[in-house]
Image 1 (tube, rainbow, N blue to C red):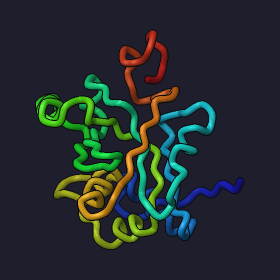
Image 2 (image 1 turned 90 degrees about the vertical axis):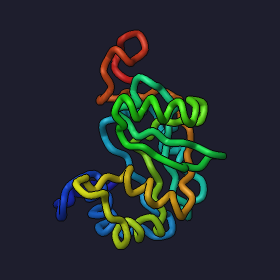
Image 3 (image 1 turned 135 degrees about the horizontal axis):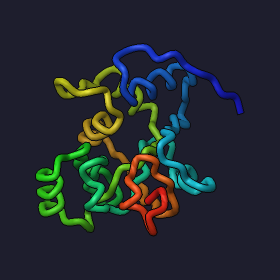
Length: 176
């Protein structure tokens, strides 16, 4: 495996890294697989779950956990597709989202995705972040999902989440 460091250019946020990486790697029909490093998945099952139709964008999601909703992207899933997504809602918005859609219809966005060439074109040419916000991949995915399918693939295997407080992890261990 070849590993390259890519100098970051442009207003920085996680979408900047994705777009700079896509320009460097020049993905074709296989799309681009994105894996941020603050979630660690033992084994290869998490990325394997993103297999499938490379012509479509897909995100990995975990079952909904109300106590983590204010620090994660919360997806409303309908028949395996992302409909609305709310990025890190405050406590009041998270509670409203939970009551309006029901916990059984909600998922937590993970930091693994398969991005189609159509998504990469949308992100580089058409996505405009909300005023005052960063170029976040999750917000771009939410805008893209208004006009194109974004599959949600549920993964509930083991993950070590370096961003989750220990009190939200089983038996106080790191991860969720």
